[in-house]
Image 1: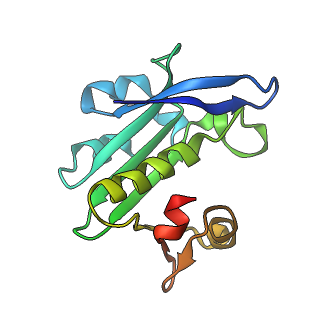
Image 2: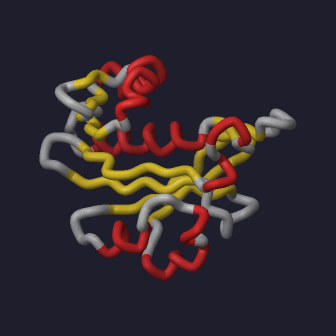
Length: 154
């Protein structure tokens, strides 16, 4: 469990919230409605190669704001999937900073494991430029992208 102070901000009011990163397990699957999520998180949770992390607000531990599926690839962290809850997508999103918290978590985990912050992921083609600009990610062929030490520290 990891607590983050002032890590997300409500878009309408500017109010900031303390959040918590914790493992998302099969017993937590009832906290999400399948209709509100694009990916099959039950499949991610049951895959032994993956670890799924959830972000919740401390004062509202039952609402999951974002999920991240990651794996240890011996010399880097692989982000399989990251998805914000339906209420926090697109122009109508209620909070800012939500996915960034879990990407920062993946970078920190990479440093903790001695991988120098390296994190790899596959981008949707329309988001490659966005990831380059916002995260400092680099394309390493096709849709494959990497965060190196410099980008991870940012």
